[in-house]
Length: 498
Ligand code: BES
Ligand code: ZN
Ligand code: ZN
Image (cartoon, rainbow, N blue to C red):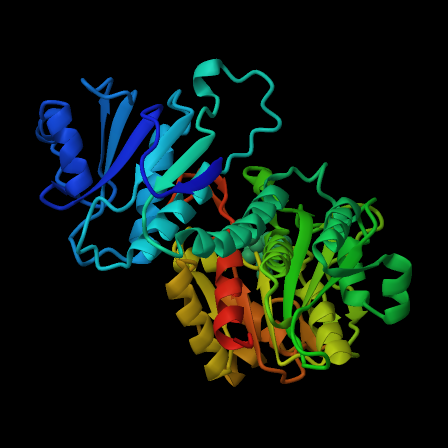
């Protein structure tokens, strides 16, 4: 969907969107339309119990005396209480209403209300962000969609005289390109996105100014990433590690490191997962998808910071060459791991790339993202918070603040020496799971911590966040793109020179 901006309403074609605060009360511009239509809007409000609450929508089709084919009014909630996230939600609700409605164009009046509690440019910008986010759809494999189900909405014109709106949206829009790349990667099935094809997609980021290095199995063996390689042993697809470098900061400034789990399909390996729902494991590369999308976002908006993105790309399959429960591997760090469950593979991938990142790049901080445990879904549910684990107070505060600001929320869970002991092992330095399922997300995080070499670090378990079975705040069913805006905000507020 194309978004453009105009200071005044031009042609009366397509749909018209207005906003109302609780009452319901339309702004000055909106009231004019009510009069023109002979009070049709007020009548529609009464008939449909519309009071202007957030999430409420009313559509008036073929309004009298107007060139528009319909008027859509979106509720914003209490005046003075409209936050940037509420503005995004309102934009998303609007697009959800019109996306497949038959309308091709919508003119959105974003200054029809005073006393919103948000500056005009902020309101308009976040309405536009919500609209763009909700317009995403992954329909490339649908060859027989009936006309009535196809996406129709192609163009939105935001009408506002607020200064700085177009510029503000310009930069936000670049971040959304990163979100869309993440959604594309995560939506693709595992016969399309496997380690080599994922690496090829990453290579394409060179055109945006990112330096890309791709390591194949031969190089990984030479480096000594035996823990990561052990996971990919059962797959016909060669494992890869991709390193992305964005050098937007001062030369020689220590970088920030983003590290992603990229298991392009997780069958569980020899510790095979049950069949029902296994298709979901195509998005077990979600952490790598977030890192890749974030790197693109940072490059597009030319962020003044040095960032390294590293993703471990492997497929976890059962076969005669697969690793077995009970195997012992020597990780890149030199520490040995007994593989008690081949389905606890994500931590084995991250162990080597975390160690590699700190050893080679000496980062200021490392953040890893992974669909690491089913247990985090038991703890926090789906679509609410990602779990964060860190013993660094600054990193925790920074991520929490960035989560609240961007809407990609996080909730901190504990780490401590006691939990650390739970992964001690009789025949190796550690085992790849705790004793039984208790505190499964925490023991996974404790495992990762042993590979950070005490560099400031946080682990973000995004298993409940990257995919959704129902439409949400600003996304349809499927890949949410969660995480890109979180990392972008975190970087912006904590590491960029102004
Ligand atoms: N990829 C899964 C975690 C997962 C489960 C992500 C459900 C999204 C939805 C991970 O590799 C895994 O299987 N973890 C095991 C660990 C256990 C064997 C210690 C788990 O969570 O059950
Ligand atoms: Zn697994
Ligand atoms: Zn996994």
